[in-house]
Image (cartoon, rainbow, N blue to C red; front, side, top):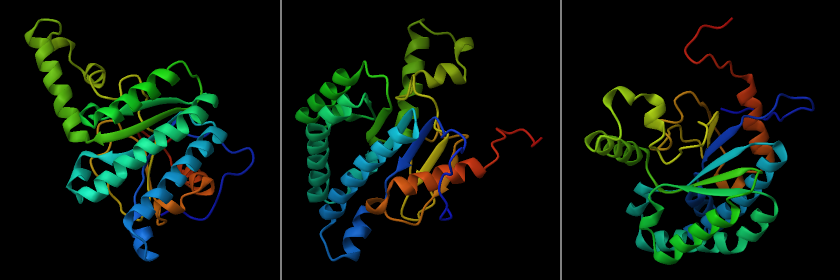
Length: 245
Protein backbone atom coordinates (compact mmCIF):
# COMPACT_ATOMS: atom_id res chain seq x y z
CA UNK A 1 0.00 0.00 0.00
CA UNK A 2 1.05 3.59 -0.59
CA UNK A 3 2.45 5.54 2.32
CA UNK A 4 1.52 9.16 2.96
CA UNK A 5 4.47 10.70 1.17
CA UNK A 6 4.50 13.11 -1.76
CA UNK A 7 6.85 14.15 -4.49
CA UNK A 8 9.70 16.32 -3.29
CA UNK A 9 11.31 19.19 -5.12
CA UNK A 10 13.91 17.82 -7.49
CA UNK A 11 12.31 14.37 -7.65
CA UNK A 12 12.74 12.28 -10.81
CA UNK A 13 10.46 12.91 -13.74
CA UNK A 14 7.02 11.26 -13.52
CA UNK A 15 6.30 8.07 -15.44
CA UNK A 16 5.45 8.73 -19.06
CA UNK A 17 2.15 6.81 -18.98
CA UNK A 18 -0.11 6.33 -15.97
CA UNK A 19 -3.26 4.20 -16.13
CA UNK A 20 -5.91 4.31 -13.42
CA UNK A 21 -8.70 1.92 -12.45
CA UNK A 22 -11.18 4.35 -10.91
CA UNK A 23 -12.91 2.21 -8.28
CA UNK A 24 -15.09 2.97 -5.28
CA UNK A 25 -17.78 5.42 -6.40
CA UNK A 26 -20.62 3.21 -5.17
CA UNK A 27 -19.01 2.56 -1.80
CA UNK A 28 -18.31 6.26 -1.38
CA UNK A 29 -21.99 7.03 -1.91
CA UNK A 30 -23.21 4.17 0.31
CA UNK A 31 -21.03 5.31 3.19
CA UNK A 32 -22.82 8.68 3.05
CA UNK A 33 -26.33 7.34 2.58
CA UNK A 34 -26.47 8.64 -0.98
CA UNK A 35 -27.59 6.96 -4.22
CA UNK A 36 -24.83 5.37 -6.30
CA UNK A 37 -25.20 8.04 -8.98
CA UNK A 38 -24.00 10.63 -6.44
CA UNK A 39 -20.77 8.67 -6.12
CA UNK A 40 -20.37 8.58 -9.89
CA UNK A 41 -20.97 12.33 -10.05
CA UNK A 42 -18.25 12.94 -7.48
CA UNK A 43 -16.07 10.54 -9.42
CA UNK A 44 -16.34 12.84 -12.45
CA UNK A 45 -15.05 15.70 -10.28
CA UNK A 46 -12.09 13.53 -9.28
CA UNK A 47 -11.50 12.70 -12.94
CA UNK A 48 -11.33 16.38 -13.78
CA UNK A 49 -8.85 16.95 -10.98
CA UNK A 50 -6.55 14.09 -11.95
CA UNK A 51 -6.36 15.30 -15.56
CA UNK A 52 -5.30 18.72 -14.31
CA UNK A 53 -2.79 17.10 -11.96
CA UNK A 54 -1.40 14.97 -14.78
CA UNK A 55 -0.79 18.07 -16.83
CA UNK A 56 0.92 19.82 -13.92
CA UNK A 57 3.17 16.83 -13.28
CA UNK A 58 4.20 16.53 -16.92
CA UNK A 59 2.66 13.12 -17.63
CA UNK A 60 2.45 12.36 -21.35
CA UNK A 61 -0.34 9.75 -21.30
CA UNK A 62 -3.13 9.23 -18.79
CA UNK A 63 -5.48 6.28 -19.32
CA UNK A 64 -8.69 6.05 -17.29
CA UNK A 65 -10.86 2.94 -17.00
CA UNK A 66 -14.28 4.60 -17.30
CA UNK A 67 -16.62 1.71 -18.22
CA UNK A 68 -15.70 -1.93 -18.62
CA UNK A 69 -17.41 -4.44 -20.87
CA UNK A 70 -18.46 -6.21 -17.65
CA UNK A 71 -20.20 -3.09 -16.33
CA UNK A 72 -23.20 -3.90 -18.51
CA UNK A 73 -24.09 -6.43 -15.79
CA UNK A 74 -24.98 -3.58 -13.45
CA UNK A 75 -28.62 -2.48 -13.00
CA UNK A 76 -29.94 -0.71 -16.13
CA UNK A 77 -30.62 2.47 -14.17
CA UNK A 78 -26.98 2.65 -13.07
CA UNK A 79 -25.74 2.00 -16.61
CA UNK A 80 -28.03 4.80 -17.85
CA UNK A 81 -26.61 7.11 -15.18
CA UNK A 82 -23.04 6.28 -16.24
CA UNK A 83 -23.81 6.88 -19.91
CA UNK A 84 -25.46 10.17 -18.99
CA UNK A 85 -22.37 11.25 -17.08
CA UNK A 86 -20.19 10.35 -20.07
CA UNK A 87 -22.37 12.55 -22.28
CA UNK A 88 -22.20 15.37 -19.76
CA UNK A 89 -18.43 15.11 -19.38
CA UNK A 90 -17.80 15.26 -23.11
CA UNK A 91 -20.14 18.20 -23.60
CA UNK A 92 -18.85 20.22 -20.66
CA UNK A 93 -15.15 19.44 -20.65
CA UNK A 94 -14.16 19.27 -24.32
CA UNK A 95 -13.65 22.99 -24.78
CA UNK A 96 -11.45 23.32 -21.68
CA UNK A 97 -9.43 20.20 -22.51
CA UNK A 98 -8.88 21.44 -26.06
CA UNK A 99 -7.84 24.88 -24.82
CA UNK A 100 -5.26 23.21 -22.56
CA UNK A 101 -3.77 21.21 -25.42
CA UNK A 102 -5.10 17.83 -24.27
CA UNK A 103 -5.52 15.17 -26.93
CA UNK A 104 -8.42 12.77 -26.31
CA UNK A 105 -8.46 9.14 -27.41
CA UNK A 106 -10.96 6.41 -26.66
CA UNK A 107 -10.25 2.69 -26.53
CA UNK A 108 -12.71 -0.17 -26.35
CA UNK A 109 -15.80 -1.09 -28.30
CA UNK A 110 -17.23 2.41 -27.97
CA UNK A 111 -18.78 2.34 -31.42
CA UNK A 112 -21.39 -0.01 -29.98
CA UNK A 113 -22.70 2.69 -27.64
CA UNK A 114 -25.69 4.94 -28.35
CA UNK A 115 -25.30 6.91 -31.57
CA UNK A 116 -25.23 10.30 -29.84
CA UNK A 117 -22.38 9.15 -27.58
CA UNK A 118 -20.47 7.78 -30.58
CA UNK A 119 -20.84 11.18 -32.25
CA UNK A 120 -19.59 12.98 -29.13
CA UNK A 121 -16.57 10.66 -28.97
CA UNK A 122 -15.78 11.15 -32.65
CA UNK A 123 -16.03 14.94 -32.25
CA UNK A 124 -13.76 14.88 -29.20
CA UNK A 125 -11.10 12.82 -30.97
CA UNK A 126 -11.25 14.89 -34.15
CA UNK A 127 -11.26 18.25 -32.36
CA UNK A 128 -8.20 17.43 -30.26
CA UNK A 129 -6.29 15.28 -32.76
CA UNK A 130 -3.61 17.92 -33.35
CA UNK A 131 -3.00 18.79 -29.71
CA UNK A 132 0.50 18.18 -28.36
CA UNK A 133 -0.08 18.15 -24.60
CA UNK A 134 -1.21 15.31 -22.38
CA UNK A 135 -2.98 12.47 -24.19
CA UNK A 136 -6.09 11.48 -22.24
CA UNK A 137 -7.08 7.92 -23.08
CA UNK A 138 -10.56 6.91 -21.92
CA UNK A 139 -11.41 3.21 -21.87
CA UNK A 140 -15.14 2.80 -22.53
CA UNK A 141 -16.88 -0.53 -23.09
CA UNK A 142 -13.38 -1.93 -22.76
CA UNK A 143 -12.25 -5.43 -21.84
CA UNK A 144 -8.71 -6.68 -22.35
CA UNK A 145 -9.73 -10.25 -23.17
CA UNK A 146 -12.00 -9.14 -26.00
CA UNK A 147 -9.30 -6.71 -27.20
CA UNK A 148 -6.77 -9.55 -27.46
CA UNK A 149 -9.26 -11.90 -29.12
CA UNK A 150 -10.22 -9.23 -31.67
CA UNK A 151 -6.55 -8.54 -32.42
CA UNK A 152 -5.99 -12.27 -32.96
CA UNK A 153 -8.96 -12.46 -35.32
CA UNK A 154 -7.69 -9.51 -37.36
CA UNK A 155 -4.20 -11.00 -37.57
CA UNK A 156 -5.66 -14.33 -38.70
CA UNK A 157 -7.70 -12.55 -41.36
CA UNK A 158 -4.57 -10.71 -42.55
CA UNK A 159 -2.72 -14.01 -42.88
CA UNK A 160 -5.62 -15.55 -44.80
CA UNK A 161 -5.80 -12.67 -47.28
CA UNK A 162 -2.02 -12.68 -47.74
CA UNK A 163 -1.30 -9.21 -46.34
CA UNK A 164 0.62 -10.76 -43.42
CA UNK A 165 2.77 -13.85 -43.17
CA UNK A 166 3.25 -16.10 -40.16
CA UNK A 167 6.90 -15.11 -39.96
CA UNK A 168 5.89 -11.46 -39.60
CA UNK A 169 3.87 -12.10 -36.47
CA UNK A 170 5.75 -11.07 -33.32
CA UNK A 171 5.03 -9.00 -30.21
CA UNK A 172 5.41 -5.72 -32.06
CA UNK A 173 3.10 -6.85 -34.84
CA UNK A 174 0.51 -8.05 -32.34
CA UNK A 175 0.59 -4.77 -30.41
CA UNK A 176 -0.17 -2.97 -33.66
CA UNK A 177 -3.57 -4.65 -33.76
CA UNK A 178 -4.61 -3.61 -30.24
CA UNK A 179 -6.80 -0.60 -29.42
CA UNK A 180 -3.74 1.10 -27.95
CA UNK A 181 -1.68 1.18 -31.15
CA UNK A 182 0.60 4.21 -31.02
CA UNK A 183 0.28 4.54 -27.23
CA UNK A 184 3.23 3.46 -25.08
CA UNK A 185 2.62 0.78 -22.48
CA UNK A 186 1.77 2.15 -19.03
CA UNK A 187 4.64 2.52 -16.59
CA UNK A 188 2.32 2.75 -13.60
CA UNK A 189 -1.15 1.33 -13.00
CA UNK A 190 -3.07 2.72 -10.03
CA UNK A 191 -6.21 1.19 -8.55
CA UNK A 192 -8.25 2.91 -5.88
CA UNK A 193 -10.63 1.44 -3.24
CA UNK A 194 -8.16 -1.10 -1.84
CA UNK A 195 -8.98 -3.85 -4.34
CA UNK A 196 -5.84 -5.54 -5.70
CA UNK A 197 -6.60 -6.83 -9.19
CA UNK A 198 -6.52 -5.54 -12.77
CA UNK A 199 -10.13 -6.46 -13.61
CA UNK A 200 -9.49 -7.16 -17.31
CA UNK A 201 -7.70 -3.84 -17.83
CA UNK A 202 -4.70 -3.52 -20.17
CA UNK A 203 -3.55 -7.08 -19.51
CA UNK A 204 -1.17 -7.12 -22.51
CA UNK A 205 0.03 -3.55 -22.09
CA UNK A 206 0.61 -3.67 -18.33
CA UNK A 207 3.02 -6.60 -18.48
CA UNK A 208 5.85 -4.60 -16.87
CA UNK A 209 3.89 -1.79 -15.25
CA UNK A 210 4.35 -1.04 -11.58
CA UNK A 211 1.08 -1.65 -9.72
CA UNK A 212 0.06 0.67 -6.90
CA UNK A 213 -3.09 -0.09 -4.89
CA UNK A 214 -4.54 2.71 -2.79
CA UNK A 215 -7.06 2.38 0.04
CA UNK A 216 -8.95 5.58 -0.73
CA UNK A 217 -12.14 5.55 -2.83
CA UNK A 218 -12.05 7.20 -6.25
CA UNK A 219 -14.13 10.31 -5.36
CA UNK A 220 -11.50 11.11 -2.72
CA UNK A 221 -8.59 10.88 -5.19
CA UNK A 222 -6.68 14.17 -5.47
CA UNK A 223 -3.51 15.59 -6.95
CA UNK A 224 -1.77 14.63 -3.70
CA UNK A 225 -2.97 11.04 -4.18
CA UNK A 226 -1.42 10.99 -7.64
CA UNK A 227 1.81 12.41 -6.28
CA UNK A 228 1.90 9.70 -3.61
CA UNK A 229 1.47 6.98 -6.24
CA UNK A 230 4.21 8.49 -8.40
CA UNK A 231 6.47 8.74 -5.35
CA UNK A 232 5.87 5.04 -4.71
CA UNK A 233 6.67 4.32 -8.37
CA UNK A 234 10.06 5.98 -8.00
CA UNK A 235 10.89 3.77 -5.01
CA UNK A 236 10.51 0.65 -7.16
CA UNK A 237 13.40 -0.96 -9.02
CA UNK A 238 12.28 -1.76 -12.56
CA UNK A 239 14.35 -4.68 -13.89
CA UNK A 240 12.20 -6.00 -16.78
CA UNK A 241 13.21 -9.55 -15.99
CA UNK A 242 16.92 -8.84 -15.46
CA UNK A 243 18.79 -8.91 -12.18
CA UNK A 244 19.55 -5.76 -10.24
CA UNK A 245 22.95 -4.12 -10.69
